[in-house]
Length: 167
Image 1 (cartoon, rainbow, N blue to C red):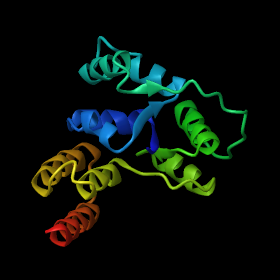
Image 2 (image 1 turned 180 degrees about the horizontal axis):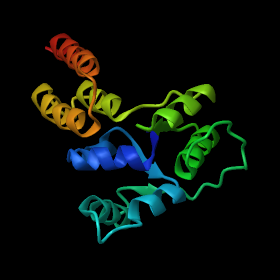
Image 3 (image 1 turned 45 degrees about the vertical axis):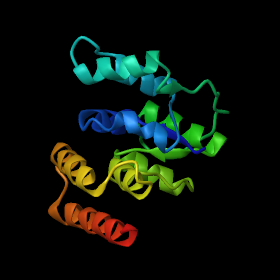
């Protein structure tokens, strides 16, 4: 089973569109300690933070206990993204981020990161969600992330191709 290391931003987006509970069907859902701290720092202020804390308490989202070996990763990114990339390199995991700088740093280290949009496509490919659900989730995600129309069009076409090939 694949191991997915999520950054805070991606988990928040996926929580907001109510798809987070389906992530376990793609693989193990893990975060590093810095991301946990980021996600749970303002529980009283954000309902998404409370929902994520509940998932942490139930071990649906697991905090990795693996220690990175002090790997140097060039780039100007946050602590959570840095630890997540280092962890992915150490344990051969998939990095999920919606942070553009972290995405570029991950690509430069040889990782093949995924974004929330790709996670939705993966859920559709594996028939964890259907095409109609994909459209609803993706529309919500596009609004939250303020995606450009050409990106929305690209992913909708990709989803339509997946749907047409599966029938």
